[in-house]
Image (cartoon, rainbow, N blue to C red):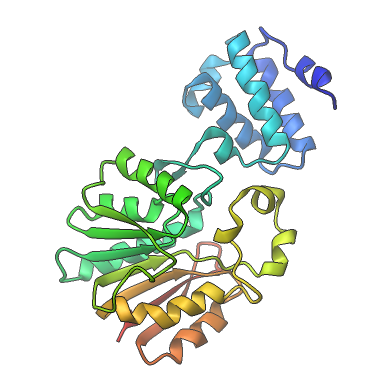
Length: 298
């Protein structure tokens, strides 16, 4: 498909009613799942309206400026760049977060970490609760926990300056900058050994290195490799955290760690043989897949 034929399918002055079926068809031809859903998200973004308002805008004409933005965005998506990066933001826990190629795109399964953290906080006698977010990326976990737990104090860590810059934007966007400290560190290297935290959450890289090539183009070609590649068995960073986290967790502190769907038993054994942890268990997500390690610091 050359640029001329591509643009000809979406002429200036065309109505949304005519554009939408063509857009869905193009997305389907590119092998994109849920093409109709993505079409509506993209059109709502272009028209600066909610998806529920699209039906009322069915006869709205596409002017030259909107058409230019539309063609640019669609060309990027057909190259399989994730829609989240094109829009510049994505939703998590019903909140909008800035995202760029410097950070992973928020995923629904990560909400299990939030649910478990809030359950623990509701039963905790610690005040303020001291929370550590390791590998914060865009800052979604730290921000959500700060908003849900107004008395909590949080430290969010990432080794990527570019990721921390996005996290800082999200922290400010949601008005929790006074309770979240952002730290540049390769995991725990910036911390002294002390009982600093009552709760730790982490979403480390856990994809087996050789499997990266088999991932979807959206993930393989666009999301940050250092946030995905877990080494030969996908466990390199999980093993590091297992060994080093006890040094900064208070007795009885909760650790929540997102893992790969096929790593449950191996991760459970890894933490179970470490005498610093008790009540080690693996929790499944809504799809029934092992997703989160949950354990307590002894």
